[in-house]
Structures are given as structure tokens and as C-alpha cells.
Image (cartoon, rainbow, N blue to C red; front, top):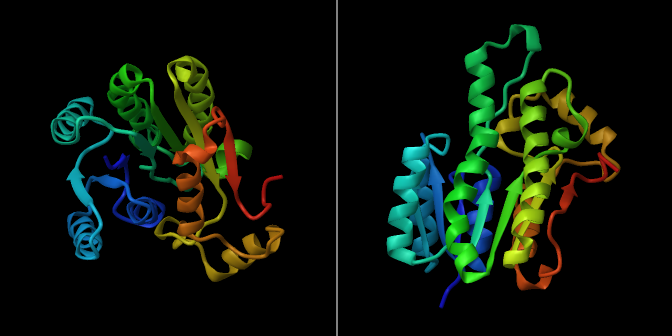
Length: 244
């Protein structure tokens, strides 16, 4: 029986790479997206046309009722979820004094609340089977903090704390919970950075370059694999040495 993986924020960037890498490794992959209908449809079509088992579901991951609806549908179809990848996230750049409460809430709800809602939804099945793996995508800014990204840094730091606490809580049930903290990755989220900004970040990175979404996805694949069966509650930095 194929193992089933659920990836939030799977229509682009790191999420899309996670979908492809997991599917190519033999998983049945369901990915969630919110607004990118055409992009999600294109990704699912491209991967299924290659013989991979991939499907997309529209879901607002900050809405408990929408998460409940989608998870109920998935469990009716697949019966269980083996791997959850909490990847959905947005950023807001600017001075904290210029940030509205609504903008703060949008970052917190997408980047942190969704991790709670999706984890809560899959855990009963994982606990009953005494098997499962949750992988949360944080950021190196959740480890160190970034000027002009206070909300994003706070949310991603929350993801790290969530990972460690939940790993301790569900470890006795045979469930592993880990976290990947990417550095500067070549994604649409970072496309707002100028070429000069990118060069400066590359200069600060010991490996001298930005990372790729596939490098994050392959780390996720490792953490999902039985080869990492004694790893839980850990934060794996994939940042080229930017944070040591």
C-alpha cells in the first residue's frame, strides 16, 4: 500500500518541490492550495501525466471548518495520512509600526495557526495507528529574527516551539515531528528582493549561493523516510551555513 503524504501550500515554490519529490519517491500526494487555482491544476496535471499519484484540494488552511471538510474527504478516500508537511506560509516586510492588526493576523494565521489546525486534524488517525510523521517548514528567521520581518520571524519561531513540544507529546505514540528551517531559497516569495540584495545574502552565506526548493524538498523526504526513524523534535537548518 502506498504511503500517503499531505502537503499544505503545495502549488508553488518549496511546496511544489515537496509534492514532486515525494510523488517521485512513491507517495500518493495530496496538496492543498488556497488561491492559485490554475497553478495547482497545472502542477497536478503535469505530475499525473508522468504517472505519479498526485491530487490537489482547495483549502483555506487558517479556517477550521474548511480544514475539517477537506480532511474528512481525504480520510474517506485514503483512510489515513502517513506524512503531513506543513508548508503554507506568507510573509510581510516592513516596519512593525506600519503593520496593521489585520496584516499581523494574516501572517500568524497562515504561518502558525494552520500548523495547529492540520496537525490536530491528522493526529487522531496517526495515534490510533501508532505511526506517522509531521514535518513543519519554519525559516532561519524563526531561529534568529529578521529586521522588518517581525511577524514572519515570530510565526516561524512559533513553528519551532510547536515542533519541539508536539514531538515530546506524541513521541510515545510512535509519531515523529520535525522541522526544516530554510535559508535564502530561490522562490517567488524572495523574488521581491533586488539583485543587489541577493548578492549581499550570497556573500553572507558560507556556501556563496542561495538554495533551491529541491534542496528543501529532499530534506523533507529524508525526514519522512524510515531512515530517519530515530529523529524527532529537531530543527534541520538548510541554509548554506548562513546560520551556524
